[in-house]
Image (tube, rainbow, N blue to C red; front, side, top):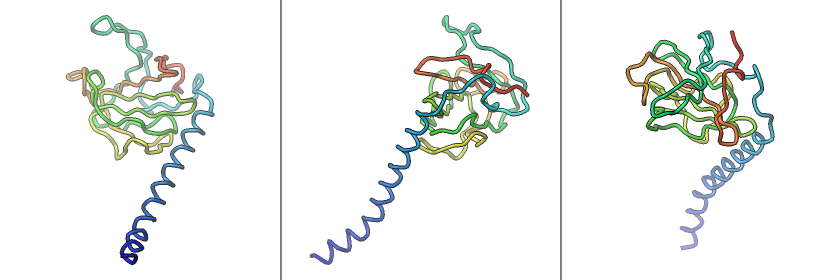
Amino acid sequence: MLLVLLFVLDKLLPSISQQTQSFVVAKWQQLSLLQQELPTENSLPSPLPGQHLTDTWGAARSQGRSHEGIDIFAPRGTPIQSTTQGIVSKVGENTLGGRVVVVVGPGGAGHYYAHLEDYADISPNDWVNAGDIIGYVGDSGNAKGTPPHVHYGVYINGSAVNPYPLLQKD
């Protein structure tokens, strides 16, 4: 019986050790992100380099809403790049945004990418760097039937802020 227990522990310990190490690394990354500065004017690269940026913040939307981000138009399937380093907090769907990705970056700012055609090979809790591909331009969610684009939003302390001034203009 003791030999069986030792065999089981021998097989489990490396797995437990790997899980503990991954957990510690993820928590350290989160803490270091929270201590970094929030994005400032012209500090973030465009999620679609080379595409024209227009400030569509605040434009009227259905049901009395206003636009809490900017739309960047590009051909369907164009790779979308993360504007920041950070931890992927969501890869999934919602009603308005369709296929979405959320990355929590420096200062805890949330970077929201919506209307994706598809996702890159990423999962929640993955670390991404600025420039890493997180998805592909589409028209999912309430943008179905519109020209393909990515809706890019930034949230600081849970409130939407205009991302246009934060982005570097080509």
